[in-house]
Image 1 (cartoon, one colour):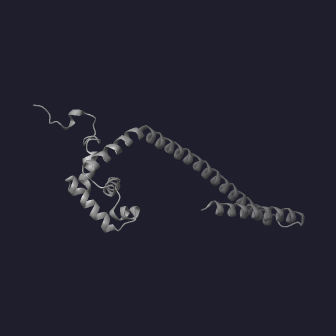
Image 2 (cartoon, one colour):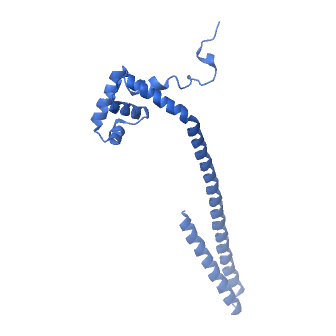
Image 3 (cartoon, rainbow, N blue to C red):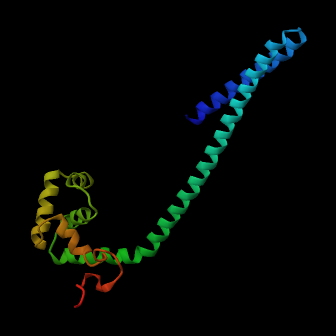
Length: 182
């Protein structure tokens, strides 16, 4: 239910409750039967319960939204802090990758395609970003692999990332990859 739907429901319940309250006041002055007043009073109370239920739900949602916004702001701040802490390293890595691409004698266009490949973009996405045909991106990527002596995208990524990532198991134990000694 949207907030607009809740507001309409709340207003409707308030109007129904007000109309019933007005009717109760006029009916009691006219000497209407007690059972009729009790039935209308019960309907008015149900309408009032609905009003409180919708209000309680609105306040609960507002509190939940506020909490989620706080969490989101914290995560955004954490992300920004990580980005700021790692910027020097990332800039250095980017420069080192560019130096290796240059050492492979890649053209500027091929270097750009190589960076986009390393970012995980598809050939179609690379072609769209560079405003070229997908076939052009494919030919350039094949040229990159040939000049680098690599078989494909996974070897290209591994060439640059293999030493940056922890060994499998991520136990933090330097000897984790070593077989146990006898």
